[in-house]
Picture 1 (cartoon, helix red, strand yellow):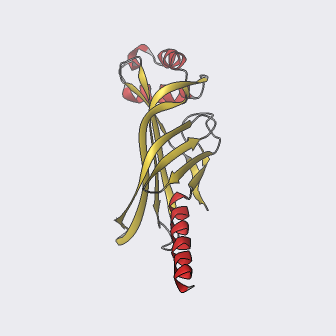
Picture 2 (cartoon, rainbow, N blue to C red):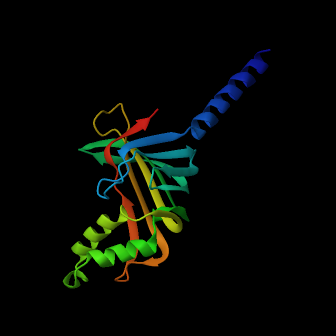
Picture 3 (cartoon, rainbow, N blue to C red):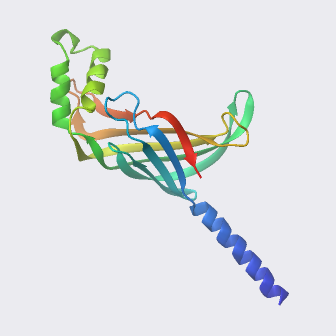
Length: 192
């Protein structure tokens, strides 16, 4: 009878540990991007898995999933050692992106002849045009990160998020890689 009870306790603890390892970590930010005009819908990043898993990123203009892994370590935060949890994934996949030919045509139209080699003017033209042209599903190398730290309250984990997507096989009119780094706006909150 006691042996069976111990087995039941062990099985319950094992199942709870496995469930905890497989629980989803969900972060929602108020706006998907701070700088691209018109990209103001919420963005949600979800990590599912244990030490290995997947990060999915969803908003009106961003949608991709990448295999990911979770690490825990210590970092210095304002002079105090705190535990940091990082979920990080990078892979070739597909995502909604500004249609590349229309994006490059728009950028070329925004740049004056004397601005063709000006990196600031190029960046501004890209930010203006990315929100103007239609989105299509295209191949990309996508990166997503969710980092959890006790930033303001030592008892509460708060998220920092980062995503980027680089077109595969498409370049800017001046020849550089087209990298779209999403900069979420407003508060990003851990959904429990």
